[in-house]
Image (cartoon, rainbow, N blue to C red; front, side):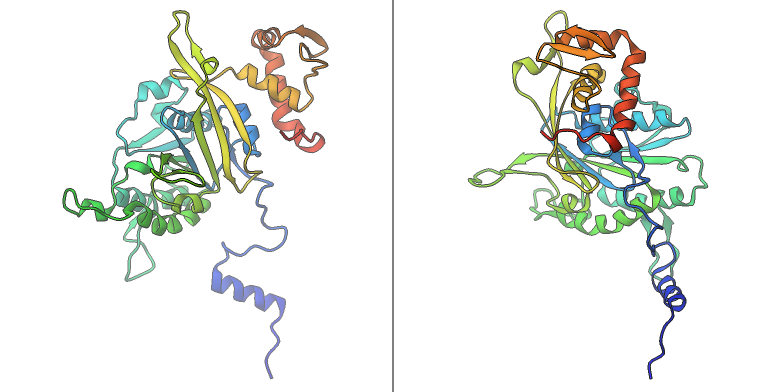
Length: 364
């Protein structure tokens, strides 16, 4: 006769087989209730993502055309995270060898708390993050950066919360590094990422780190039907990421930002949420960037969100009502928000904190 396993014995069996850190019962674990997020610097993009920013403990892909602001957005996320706490740190893998600390500082990044590693060796990057396993025993031959984050003992990596890889497109895999010049290798980055991302994903979750992989968008020559665009690395990163944002500059002339001399200093970006496991997918955000400042026109973004969530009344196409004051025209309302920071910050707080329970925004 088979012995009946009690609930306590079954629980112990689960803990023994899977480990206590991997088994959660009802009420012990919430996927979204206490999610840590990092703000992107754009209120409209934070709103489109659905949780107020990019989630920690997940892999995020920023893909887009050239000059679409991918690196700028990643640095803006770093700046936001570093502002939250003076002990927070960030890690930036500069595979393109283009990291400019002066530009990063102009975007608000405290570069003294950013560790920059310049290499495009894919094996070194992933081994440095995950560590090198020891085939003869349980302990690793070499601990990875994420191991030190999880342990929380090393002061440099104790509060590491965001890692950026710029970019996937220029990674050199071991297969490519060991091959002869001019030799054709079939999809080496896709094969490498498919294997390594499986190991990286659980470690990112344990360390509660936002891992941003920057990627490019390319057009498949000769494709007649369907989406002709693809990104380097195949579909490995698409499957592994929890959030995928596709970015593209808006090409119309009225989307350009010009200085007093008529020189172009910025433009509008359209960001599409192609995949989202923390909110609704397929939402869009259009925001303005300036090349030397980052995300611009924040007052205009708050004006749009204030109308969307009914914190700002718009009885017709001309009149805006903010705190019972009437303004004629969009420019007048934006100017009021720029000149009254207390009102602006009050609206920011209401939009970020007060609309989740009581207000259901109209879907576009």
